[in-house]
Image (cartoon, rainbow, N blue to C red; front, top):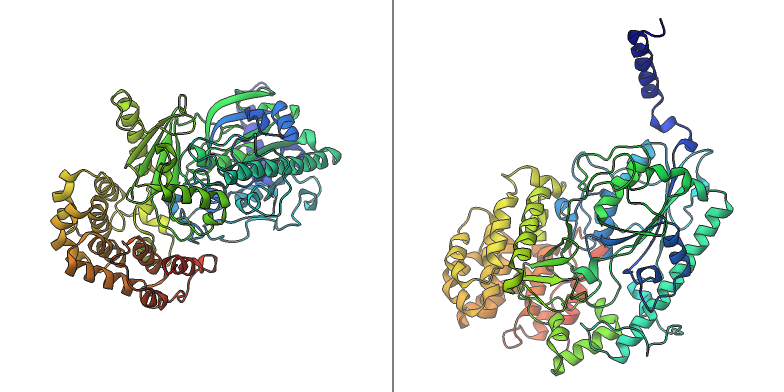
Length: 623
């Protein structure tokens, strides 16, 4: 009887049914690993274990010696809130409409933050110190999220997922004064893309000091884990949230702003869950994106990552092959609008600037609280800097291409190099495929996107081409930002398109190309100044006010003043319009007395971004 296939088939069926009834969440905690995330802010791979000569990081170096060090890790966004949004959701912020700093949008229908999925697997989930997502939480995400949150508050035998985030390396702490220097400013490495000034040396030295402080914090938590007898039961991750909080690192969607350290240690007991290339003290060249971390944790916990996550697990039973590319993005950085996409294959970095008439180094007030930023900009204004150090403050090329193998500081743009066209075309195509695959809804200007979402999740718009056709928007944005003067007739046709998003890119295309293009499209721009979409009106008005004939300049300036009134236009439209006013040549800018009267508040604005108009007005009305 017991040799019968029928008998054993029935036994297997009963076991499967019982397991289904019990549920994964009821399994004993000893059957699953604890997972510990140690994270810090504004920190690139400037650790001893990555070969940085200025690093003093003994605890992190020891963690790397006992685990695996990843070389190719991008944080998805070069600033905290969208980067953490990618972490918590496993989705690209460009697909959920959440890439803009401190925006708070709903998650797409049917999706959840990954700790909620972990809790269903029986995990106790704690987050100590910081959330800072651009997505609204739906329901309770953490068992506890506060400065008191800790794994020790879990139930008996319950596995834990615990996050400890260390803030000592944040941009604000790297410039905090008074500060007693530990690293010698005269010996630190100053990257060649910025001038070697006393402020730069002090800033980089203080950055390394603060990384050492975080190293000590990491050591303390690891000792606590060991003292509690949990070291052999816990898989440990360490990573930063994006590049250093210094200019041309944080907020820059290139390798220096996106690359972060990632260390992972698997105790012997859970070595079978480790990646296939895991070797103690080893190095992995696998490409890891922040959207990969949520699926990886779910895989380690015994769950299956949901199909709506964009990331791929790199460890555990659900581990998948890498895609071969990492993707980055930049949207609104606090009060300043921009749209940048980037992609790397590990060697080459491709940067696509969709508003190339603006510099990388726009005047973000928080950035200009850093002394090295002010000193660098002052030298630029005075003239005489070499090209590589001027580039941060100048108009950009639509496309940038850098070879990290020969040019790790991304100094020489190879986009027009005949010998690098194959690499350029390959990464350009990877960017196109990614944009269409994830459904990049942020190709719409922010105010227009939120208007179309009408209080619902903007990420859901990508599922209905009647509401948002990503392919058409992508084609329009590519045409707009190409700088090809032969595209002007096409821009004129785009100006009459039924889709306001396409019309927006038409107006932007005229603005980007300058006076000759605006003169050719003046008739279309005059119509667009009265467009039903406020975002289209802002772009058209800026084009006319900047490059138009005298009468058109007056029309453009007056339109921008009206649109900058947040009480009538709404907050996001006013932010865009005030940016446009600030971009205008001094010769056509409205009098300071008029600008001073612009309101800085509006009903219903998200409290996390309610000072952006204040910052813009302060800069716009500066003496």
